[in-house]
Length: 547
Ligand code: G16
Image (cartoon, rainbow, N blue to C red; front, side, top):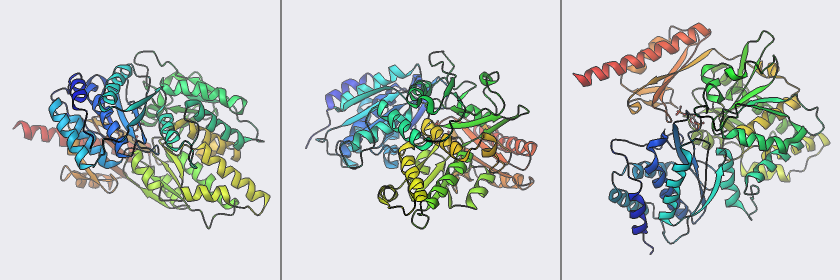
């Protein structure tokens, strides 16, 4: 029976000591905090990735170094399982335990416990593929990660600087290479090729849409969009903005999908760029979220968020399934979170089954896997569409009875190629939206009129310890601190069509408050009053602690 390589682990772990007084937690999207505190976390995640691969018989595990939508000083790391999906939940606990072991000796002890409890055969090979976004803290953190791979003897492939969805794609492509489920060529070029050729087939014969303006959040999406644009050629012209990946402090700053969603405003840098009616979208810092928007004739800003994308895409897919003569066999469903606008949930649930799950792609992804075709989008623009293996098989083998059925079937097959099956992907989703707009001859205005959003407001309350806030019912209700939910309920009752909830963020040291109501003033008022209740609670706790 092979043993842990204790000497290598000890020597290398000593180079990456855990800072005292810091607690790390594998949250909504892995570890995420100030980049300059994450050296030890990176090393330990490197070791854990190797163990995860050994546990899965040498399958390749992905490691992505990014803090996505967070501001530039933050960084993060998350593990990707062999089919390109998020790390299995049980291993998140191992990750948190290992990251918090106070000393090298404690870390090695904790590792031995994981090996024993998870029954890991250490004689198996370990393979990983890793990448990072454009953050300045990335190179040093990747060096710590590489020490982790070295310590556990993993063979590691560096995918360089790329988007989170490309890394997820690579993981699945590597693990399916040479099998009947081959996902694509295991390179960034393979990804670009796959998406662009499916897109071209889907829009063939249709009039090209006017150029699309893309706000790249000054992140890695800028580099990927430049490459994608070359592959797309004349099939879709992209006009790229916010591409300053080396300007200090520019990443996600007053631009990007999170800025657009939370401020419900045009990125100021696009103010002099965008003409009324012109389509535009924002990516986030690692290009896994997408927000569309446009200005109307009066210059007013209209945002088309993840809910609107879900409505557009789900309706299109349902139509295609019907046109292909498969409506009795293939059922489409939608997955949302508590942040979904009430109007979108109403619109969708009148047409399709809709499930609500807690925030975090992993929750949405798993729920979507239960449908034949599962459309999942968070309101923040993170999402994709999953085709079950049986559905993919059916689409590839079904014999259509009419030319119209054959065309619809062909479109569905091409959608399985266009849509990233591993994770939410801003560039793939953008092409998907463009396909639907092209087929329906919709401008942003027609798309926007599918339903009218209830006015809503999202606010953050900065807290010292977000863990005192605990939720239930897919994060729609608080169970802790005691009594706070009753106060929120009382407040919400005073607003027409009022809805509000409070949940701790898994990626920032904040508590998020969401509110919606029939008017903008009421939604803002409700959000700020609920935020006030959270703040009062914190003050009274601090006061009680001090007394
Ligand atoms: C990550 C997750 C998303 C989640 C978002 C915000 O996005 O992947 O599922 O919606 O964080 O999460 P929270 O409200 O818990 O902070 P990203 O784009 O930052 O990786």
